[in-house]
Image (cartoon, rainbow, N blue to C red; front, side, top):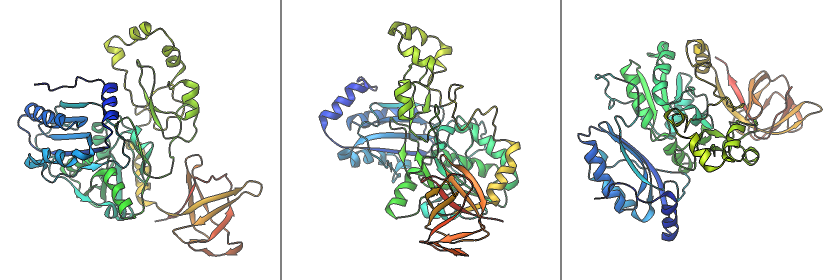
Length: 452
Protein backbone atom coordinates (compact mmCIF):
# COMPACT_ATOMS: atom_id res chain seq x y z
CA UNK A 1 0.00 0.00 0.00
CA UNK A 2 1.23 3.49 -0.88
CA UNK A 3 2.50 5.27 2.24
CA UNK A 4 4.19 8.28 0.67
CA UNK A 5 3.38 11.27 -1.55
CA UNK A 6 3.36 10.88 -5.33
CA UNK A 7 2.18 14.39 -6.28
CA UNK A 8 4.33 17.50 -6.46
CA UNK A 9 3.35 20.66 -4.60
CA UNK A 10 2.20 22.23 -7.89
CA UNK A 11 0.02 19.25 -8.75
CA UNK A 12 -1.49 19.24 -5.26
CA UNK A 13 -2.25 22.98 -5.44
CA UNK A 14 -4.05 22.43 -8.76
CA UNK A 15 -6.19 19.68 -7.20
CA UNK A 16 -7.08 22.00 -4.29
CA UNK A 17 -8.16 24.65 -6.81
CA UNK A 18 -10.29 22.14 -8.69
CA UNK A 19 -11.92 20.87 -5.49
CA UNK A 20 -13.01 24.40 -4.59
CA UNK A 21 -13.32 23.57 -0.88
CA UNK A 22 -12.15 25.54 2.12
CA UNK A 23 -9.40 24.00 4.26
CA UNK A 24 -8.45 24.51 7.90
CA UNK A 25 -4.86 24.96 9.05
CA UNK A 26 -4.39 23.49 12.51
CA UNK A 27 -1.78 22.09 14.87
CA UNK A 28 -1.71 19.74 17.84
CA UNK A 29 0.69 17.71 19.94
CA UNK A 30 0.62 15.04 22.62
CA UNK A 31 3.29 13.52 24.83
CA UNK A 32 2.71 9.80 25.31
CA UNK A 33 4.53 6.48 25.33
CA UNK A 34 4.29 5.02 21.81
CA UNK A 35 5.69 1.50 21.59
CA UNK A 36 5.94 1.25 17.79
CA UNK A 37 6.31 4.71 16.19
CA UNK A 38 6.73 3.28 12.68
CA UNK A 39 3.43 1.38 12.77
CA UNK A 40 1.77 4.42 14.37
CA UNK A 41 3.13 6.55 11.53
CA UNK A 42 1.88 4.17 8.83
CA UNK A 43 -1.60 3.90 10.35
CA UNK A 44 -1.91 7.69 10.49
CA UNK A 45 -0.77 8.08 6.88
CA UNK A 46 -3.42 5.64 5.63
CA UNK A 47 -6.21 7.32 7.64
CA UNK A 48 -5.22 10.91 6.79
CA UNK A 49 -4.41 10.33 3.14
CA UNK A 50 -7.97 9.05 2.69
CA UNK A 51 -9.28 12.38 4.03
CA UNK A 52 -6.97 14.50 1.84
CA UNK A 53 -5.29 15.77 5.01
CA UNK A 54 -1.89 17.38 4.41
CA UNK A 55 0.86 18.60 6.69
CA UNK A 56 4.17 18.07 8.45
CA UNK A 57 4.03 15.54 11.31
CA UNK A 58 6.68 14.04 13.56
CA UNK A 59 6.14 10.94 15.69
CA UNK A 60 8.45 9.34 18.23
CA UNK A 61 8.40 7.09 21.27
CA UNK A 62 7.54 10.22 23.30
CA UNK A 63 4.48 11.33 21.26
CA UNK A 64 3.29 13.28 18.23
CA UNK A 65 3.74 16.84 16.90
CA UNK A 66 1.61 17.92 13.93
CA UNK A 67 0.97 20.99 11.79
CA UNK A 68 -1.71 20.25 9.20
CA UNK A 69 -4.20 21.37 6.57
CA UNK A 70 -7.54 19.55 6.60
CA UNK A 71 -10.62 20.00 4.36
CA UNK A 72 -13.18 21.89 6.44
CA UNK A 73 -15.91 19.38 5.58
CA UNK A 74 -13.68 16.55 6.84
CA UNK A 75 -12.81 18.16 10.16
CA UNK A 76 -14.97 15.90 12.32
CA UNK A 77 -13.86 12.81 10.41
CA UNK A 78 -10.27 13.89 11.02
CA UNK A 79 -10.96 14.31 14.73
CA UNK A 80 -12.39 10.78 14.76
CA UNK A 81 -9.05 9.41 13.51
CA UNK A 82 -7.43 10.89 16.63
CA UNK A 83 -10.06 9.61 19.05
CA UNK A 84 -9.01 6.03 18.15
CA UNK A 85 -5.99 6.55 20.43
CA UNK A 86 -6.57 6.93 24.17
CA UNK A 87 -3.85 9.56 24.59
CA UNK A 88 -5.50 11.78 21.94
CA UNK A 89 -9.09 11.56 23.14
CA UNK A 90 -10.39 15.12 23.55
CA UNK A 91 -7.11 16.59 22.32
CA UNK A 92 -7.10 20.35 21.69
CA UNK A 93 -6.70 21.27 18.03
CA UNK A 94 -5.20 24.74 17.60
CA UNK A 95 -6.92 26.22 14.56
CA UNK A 96 -4.89 28.96 12.85
CA UNK A 97 -5.86 32.62 13.19
CA UNK A 98 -5.57 33.17 9.43
CA UNK A 99 -6.68 30.45 7.03
CA UNK A 100 -4.92 29.57 3.79
CA UNK A 101 -5.97 26.67 1.58
CA UNK A 102 -2.36 26.17 0.50
CA UNK A 103 -0.61 26.23 3.88
CA UNK A 104 0.57 22.63 3.32
CA UNK A 105 0.78 20.82 0.00
CA UNK A 106 2.10 17.41 1.06
CA UNK A 107 1.39 14.84 3.75
CA UNK A 108 4.73 14.16 5.40
CA UNK A 109 4.89 11.96 8.52
CA UNK A 110 8.37 11.23 9.83
CA UNK A 111 9.59 9.03 12.66
CA UNK A 112 12.07 10.87 14.88
CA UNK A 113 13.98 10.09 18.05
CA UNK A 114 12.02 12.85 19.78
CA UNK A 115 9.18 15.10 18.71
CA UNK A 116 11.08 18.06 20.21
CA UNK A 117 14.86 17.75 20.16
CA UNK A 118 16.04 18.73 23.65
CA UNK A 119 19.64 17.49 23.80
CA UNK A 120 18.88 15.76 27.11
CA UNK A 121 20.06 12.30 28.09
CA UNK A 122 18.50 11.88 31.51
CA UNK A 123 16.37 8.81 32.25
CA UNK A 124 15.03 10.44 35.44
CA UNK A 125 13.47 13.34 33.51
CA UNK A 126 9.69 12.87 33.32
CA UNK A 127 8.28 14.93 30.45
CA UNK A 128 4.72 14.39 31.69
CA UNK A 129 5.42 16.20 35.01
CA UNK A 130 4.58 19.54 33.44
CA UNK A 131 3.91 23.02 34.75
CA UNK A 132 0.52 24.62 35.40
CA UNK A 133 -1.42 25.61 32.27
CA UNK A 134 -2.79 29.16 32.10
CA UNK A 135 -5.50 30.55 29.86
CA UNK A 136 -5.12 33.94 28.17
CA UNK A 137 -6.52 36.13 30.97
CA UNK A 138 -4.66 34.16 33.64
CA UNK A 139 -1.47 34.54 31.62
CA UNK A 140 -2.04 38.31 31.33
CA UNK A 141 -2.63 38.57 35.07
CA UNK A 142 0.60 36.76 35.86
CA UNK A 143 2.51 38.94 33.40
CA UNK A 144 1.46 41.95 35.49
CA UNK A 145 2.82 40.34 38.66
CA UNK A 146 6.26 41.89 39.48
CA UNK A 147 7.24 38.50 40.88
CA UNK A 148 7.10 36.92 37.39
CA UNK A 149 9.84 36.05 34.91
CA UNK A 150 8.50 35.33 31.42
CA UNK A 151 10.61 33.38 28.90
CA UNK A 152 10.06 32.89 25.17
CA UNK A 153 11.08 29.33 24.27
CA UNK A 154 11.10 29.92 20.53
CA UNK A 155 14.05 30.63 18.25
CA UNK A 156 15.56 34.02 17.46
CA UNK A 157 13.86 34.36 14.07
CA UNK A 158 10.47 33.72 15.71
CA UNK A 159 10.70 36.10 18.66
CA UNK A 160 12.27 38.81 16.50
CA UNK A 161 8.94 39.59 14.78
CA UNK A 162 6.67 39.17 17.82
CA UNK A 163 6.78 38.38 21.54
CA UNK A 164 5.12 39.12 24.86
CA UNK A 165 6.00 42.40 26.53
CA UNK A 166 8.94 42.04 28.91
CA UNK A 167 9.82 38.51 27.80
CA UNK A 168 13.35 37.14 27.83
CA UNK A 169 14.00 36.13 24.21
CA UNK A 170 17.16 33.98 23.98
CA UNK A 171 19.21 34.39 20.82
CA UNK A 172 19.19 30.68 19.99
CA UNK A 173 18.93 28.60 16.84
CA UNK A 174 16.86 25.82 18.41
CA UNK A 175 15.02 24.71 21.51
CA UNK A 176 17.78 22.54 22.94
CA UNK A 177 20.14 25.54 23.11
CA UNK A 178 17.72 27.54 25.25
CA UNK A 179 17.30 25.03 28.10
CA UNK A 180 20.82 25.18 29.60
CA UNK A 181 21.15 28.93 28.93
CA UNK A 182 17.94 29.86 30.74
CA UNK A 183 18.60 27.31 33.50
CA UNK A 184 21.98 28.92 34.24
CA UNK A 185 20.58 32.43 34.09
CA UNK A 186 17.74 31.82 36.52
CA UNK A 187 19.47 29.77 39.21
CA UNK A 188 18.90 32.53 41.79
CA UNK A 189 15.14 32.53 41.22
CA UNK A 190 14.15 28.88 41.74
CA UNK A 191 12.34 29.40 45.02
CA UNK A 192 10.64 32.79 44.93
CA UNK A 193 9.78 33.74 41.33
CA UNK A 194 7.00 32.65 39.01
CA UNK A 195 8.61 31.14 35.92
CA UNK A 196 6.18 31.80 33.07
CA UNK A 197 6.87 30.39 29.61
CA UNK A 198 5.31 30.25 26.16
CA UNK A 199 5.92 29.10 22.59
CA UNK A 200 3.91 28.85 19.35
CA UNK A 201 1.48 26.03 20.13
CA UNK A 202 2.58 24.79 23.55
CA UNK A 203 4.71 21.76 22.68
CA UNK A 204 8.10 23.29 23.44
CA UNK A 205 7.16 24.97 26.71
CA UNK A 206 5.31 21.80 27.75
CA UNK A 207 8.67 20.02 27.71
CA UNK A 208 10.46 23.10 29.09
CA UNK A 209 8.08 23.34 32.04
CA UNK A 210 8.74 19.69 32.93
CA UNK A 211 12.48 20.29 32.55
CA UNK A 212 12.52 23.28 34.90
CA UNK A 213 10.44 21.44 37.48
CA UNK A 214 13.01 18.66 37.19
CA UNK A 215 15.71 21.28 37.81
CA UNK A 216 14.06 22.36 41.07
CA UNK A 217 12.02 25.42 40.09
CA UNK A 218 9.01 25.66 42.40
CA UNK A 219 6.51 27.87 40.55
CA UNK A 220 6.38 26.86 36.88
CA UNK A 221 3.59 27.94 34.52
CA UNK A 222 2.98 27.77 30.77
CA UNK A 223 0.62 29.36 28.28
CA UNK A 224 -1.98 26.74 27.39
CA UNK A 225 -2.05 26.15 23.65
CA UNK A 226 0.72 28.67 23.08
CA UNK A 227 0.38 31.91 21.14
CA UNK A 228 -2.13 30.35 18.72
CA UNK A 229 -4.68 29.52 21.44
CA UNK A 230 -3.91 32.78 23.28
CA UNK A 231 -4.84 34.75 20.14
CA UNK A 232 -8.10 32.87 19.71
CA UNK A 233 -9.08 33.55 23.32
CA UNK A 234 -8.23 37.26 23.34
CA UNK A 235 -10.27 37.79 20.19
CA UNK A 236 -13.27 35.77 21.29
CA UNK A 237 -13.29 37.19 24.83
CA UNK A 238 -12.17 40.75 23.96
CA UNK A 239 -9.06 40.50 26.16
CA UNK A 240 -6.13 42.91 25.84
CA UNK A 241 -3.24 41.43 23.85
CA UNK A 242 0.03 41.42 25.75
CA UNK A 243 1.64 39.83 22.70
CA UNK A 244 2.95 42.39 20.22
CA UNK A 245 3.67 41.88 16.53
CA UNK A 246 3.49 38.69 14.50
CA UNK A 247 3.41 35.04 15.45
CA UNK A 248 5.89 33.12 13.27
CA UNK A 249 4.37 29.93 11.82
CA UNK A 250 6.03 27.00 10.08
CA UNK A 251 4.13 26.91 6.81
CA UNK A 252 4.49 28.99 3.68
CA UNK A 253 2.78 32.01 5.31
CA UNK A 254 5.68 32.37 7.80
CA UNK A 255 3.58 34.53 10.10
CA UNK A 256 0.15 35.46 11.47
CA UNK A 257 -0.41 39.06 12.51
CA UNK A 258 -1.56 39.42 16.12
CA UNK A 259 -1.23 43.20 16.57
CA UNK A 260 -0.39 46.04 14.19
CA UNK A 261 2.98 46.61 15.89
CA UNK A 262 6.02 46.06 13.67
CA UNK A 263 8.87 45.39 16.08
CA UNK A 264 11.55 44.19 13.63
CA UNK A 265 13.26 45.64 10.59
CA UNK A 266 14.30 44.70 7.08
CA UNK A 267 17.60 42.89 7.44
CA UNK A 268 18.97 44.65 4.36
CA UNK A 269 17.96 48.33 4.71
CA UNK A 270 16.72 48.70 8.30
CA UNK A 271 13.20 49.82 7.37
CA UNK A 272 10.45 48.66 9.78
CA UNK A 273 9.34 45.29 8.43
CA UNK A 274 8.36 41.84 9.72
CA UNK A 275 7.89 39.82 6.53
CA UNK A 276 10.07 36.72 6.41
CA UNK A 277 11.18 35.23 3.12
CA UNK A 278 13.63 32.60 1.87
CA UNK A 279 16.50 33.59 -0.40
CA UNK A 280 15.65 32.81 -4.03
CA UNK A 281 19.05 31.19 -4.50
CA UNK A 282 18.35 27.49 -3.90
CA UNK A 283 21.98 27.00 -2.90
CA UNK A 284 21.35 29.38 0.01
CA UNK A 285 17.64 29.52 0.90
CA UNK A 286 18.43 31.73 3.91
CA UNK A 287 15.40 32.73 6.00
CA UNK A 288 15.46 36.49 6.59
CA UNK A 289 13.30 39.62 6.80
CA UNK A 290 13.00 41.65 3.59
CA UNK A 291 10.86 44.68 2.74
CA UNK A 292 9.10 45.06 -0.62
CA UNK A 293 11.64 47.59 -1.90
CA UNK A 294 14.62 45.35 -1.13
CA UNK A 295 12.73 42.34 -2.50
CA UNK A 296 12.35 44.14 -5.83
CA UNK A 297 15.91 45.49 -5.90
CA UNK A 298 17.54 42.22 -4.78
CA UNK A 299 15.10 39.92 -6.60
CA UNK A 300 14.27 38.10 -3.36
CA UNK A 301 17.92 37.27 -2.57
CA UNK A 302 19.86 37.94 0.62
CA UNK A 303 23.14 39.16 -0.90
CA UNK A 304 24.80 40.36 -4.09
CA UNK A 305 26.50 36.96 -4.32
CA UNK A 306 23.13 35.19 -4.36
CA UNK A 307 21.73 37.76 -6.78
CA UNK A 308 24.53 36.97 -9.21
CA UNK A 309 23.98 33.24 -8.71
CA UNK A 310 20.31 33.22 -9.72
CA UNK A 311 21.27 34.77 -13.07
CA UNK A 312 23.74 31.99 -13.86
CA UNK A 313 22.77 29.21 -16.27
CA UNK A 314 20.71 26.56 -14.48
CA UNK A 315 23.39 23.92 -14.90
CA UNK A 316 25.91 26.14 -13.09
CA UNK A 317 23.47 26.72 -10.24
CA UNK A 318 22.98 22.96 -9.84
CA UNK A 319 26.74 22.46 -9.58
CA UNK A 320 26.92 25.02 -6.75
CA UNK A 321 24.41 23.01 -4.75
CA UNK A 322 26.31 19.74 -4.86
CA UNK A 323 28.28 18.41 -1.91
CA UNK A 324 27.59 17.79 1.78
CA UNK A 325 29.19 21.03 2.94
CA UNK A 326 26.99 23.07 0.63
CA UNK A 327 23.88 21.17 1.68
CA UNK A 328 24.54 21.93 5.34
CA UNK A 329 24.37 25.66 4.57
CA UNK A 330 20.91 25.50 3.07
CA UNK A 331 17.85 26.43 5.17
CA UNK A 332 19.81 28.61 7.58
CA UNK A 333 17.60 30.66 9.85
CA UNK A 334 18.45 34.31 9.45
CA UNK A 335 22.10 34.60 10.44
CA UNK A 336 24.54 35.82 7.82
CA UNK A 337 27.25 38.45 7.56
CA UNK A 338 25.33 39.81 4.58
CA UNK A 339 22.43 40.89 6.81
CA UNK A 340 23.43 44.30 8.19
CA UNK A 341 20.26 44.96 10.19
CA UNK A 342 19.68 41.59 11.85
CA UNK A 343 18.76 42.27 15.49
CA UNK A 344 19.69 39.09 17.31
CA UNK A 345 23.31 38.79 16.14
CA UNK A 346 25.49 35.72 16.56
CA UNK A 347 25.14 33.60 19.68
CA UNK A 348 28.91 33.27 19.97
CA UNK A 349 29.41 37.04 20.23
CA UNK A 350 26.20 38.05 21.98
CA UNK A 351 25.41 35.25 24.43
CA UNK A 352 22.58 35.29 26.90
CA UNK A 353 24.88 34.20 29.69
CA UNK A 354 26.24 35.32 33.04
CA UNK A 355 27.19 38.76 31.77
CA UNK A 356 23.51 39.53 31.23
CA UNK A 357 22.16 38.39 34.60
CA UNK A 358 21.92 42.03 35.66
CA UNK A 359 19.64 42.74 32.70
CA UNK A 360 17.36 39.87 33.66
CA UNK A 361 17.16 41.15 37.22
CA UNK A 362 16.25 44.56 35.87
CA UNK A 363 13.47 43.07 33.80
CA UNK A 364 12.07 41.46 36.91
CA UNK A 365 12.31 44.58 39.05
CA UNK A 366 11.14 47.19 36.49
CA UNK A 367 7.57 46.91 35.22
CA UNK A 368 5.85 49.10 32.70
CA UNK A 369 2.18 49.76 31.99
CA UNK A 370 0.74 51.06 28.75
CA UNK A 371 -0.43 54.68 29.00
CA UNK A 372 -1.36 55.57 25.44
CA UNK A 373 -0.21 56.12 21.88
CA UNK A 374 1.65 58.81 19.95
CA UNK A 375 -0.37 61.16 17.75
CA UNK A 376 2.02 63.89 16.57
CA UNK A 377 5.48 65.40 16.99
CA UNK A 378 6.12 69.14 16.68
CA UNK A 379 9.73 69.10 15.52
CA UNK A 380 10.44 72.84 15.84
CA UNK A 381 9.33 73.05 19.48
CA UNK A 382 10.26 69.42 20.30
CA UNK A 383 6.79 68.68 21.70
CA UNK A 384 5.18 65.24 21.60
CA UNK A 385 1.42 64.68 21.52
CA UNK A 386 -0.15 61.52 22.94
CA UNK A 387 -3.63 60.16 23.61
CA UNK A 388 -4.12 58.71 27.11
CA UNK A 389 -5.97 55.39 26.73
CA UNK A 390 -5.24 53.22 29.76
CA UNK A 391 -3.39 54.81 32.68
CA UNK A 392 -3.18 58.17 34.47
CA UNK A 393 0.06 60.11 34.00
CA UNK A 394 1.43 62.69 36.47
CA UNK A 395 4.30 65.14 36.71
CA UNK A 396 7.31 63.28 38.08
CA UNK A 397 6.44 59.96 36.43
CA UNK A 398 9.18 58.13 34.54
CA UNK A 399 8.00 57.03 31.09
CA UNK A 400 9.18 54.88 28.21
CA UNK A 401 8.46 55.71 24.56
CA UNK A 402 8.77 52.57 22.44
CA UNK A 403 8.42 51.90 18.73
CA UNK A 404 9.98 49.97 15.84
CA UNK A 405 11.94 53.00 14.59
CA UNK A 406 12.22 55.05 17.77
CA UNK A 407 13.49 52.09 19.77
CA UNK A 408 13.11 52.50 23.55
CA UNK A 409 13.65 55.95 25.07
CA UNK A 410 13.16 56.86 28.74
CA UNK A 411 12.51 60.28 30.27
CA UNK A 412 11.02 61.95 33.35
CA UNK A 413 7.84 64.06 33.00
CA UNK A 414 8.40 67.60 34.32
CA UNK A 415 5.42 69.37 32.76
CA UNK A 416 2.15 68.22 31.17
CA UNK A 417 -0.46 70.02 29.10
CA UNK A 418 -3.80 68.17 28.83
CA UNK A 419 -6.42 69.27 26.33
CA UNK A 420 -4.63 72.58 25.83
CA UNK A 421 -3.97 73.55 29.46
CA UNK A 422 -1.37 72.74 32.15
CA UNK A 423 -2.19 70.01 34.67
CA UNK A 424 -0.66 67.85 37.38
CA UNK A 425 -2.26 64.57 36.28
CA UNK A 426 -3.69 63.53 32.91
CA UNK A 427 -6.60 61.09 32.84
CA UNK A 428 -7.86 58.45 30.43
CA UNK A 429 -9.22 60.14 27.28
CA UNK A 430 -7.02 63.24 27.62
CA UNK A 431 -4.95 64.47 24.72
CA UNK A 432 -1.62 65.49 26.22
CA UNK A 433 1.57 67.22 25.14
CA UNK A 434 4.94 67.52 26.80
CA UNK A 435 8.50 68.34 25.81
CA UNK A 436 10.38 65.40 24.37
CA UNK A 437 13.98 65.63 23.10
CA UNK A 438 13.65 63.02 20.34
CA UNK A 439 11.34 62.46 17.38
CA UNK A 440 8.30 60.22 17.92
CA UNK A 441 6.20 58.36 15.34
CA UNK A 442 2.57 57.29 15.05
CA UNK A 443 3.58 53.69 15.71
CA UNK A 444 5.08 54.61 19.11
CA UNK A 445 3.51 53.61 22.42
CA UNK A 446 3.83 55.49 25.73
CA UNK A 447 4.44 53.45 28.89
CA UNK A 448 4.73 54.45 32.55
CA UNK A 449 7.60 52.75 34.38
CA UNK A 450 6.63 51.45 37.81
CA UNK A 451 9.79 51.85 39.83
CA UNK A 452 10.50 49.34 42.60
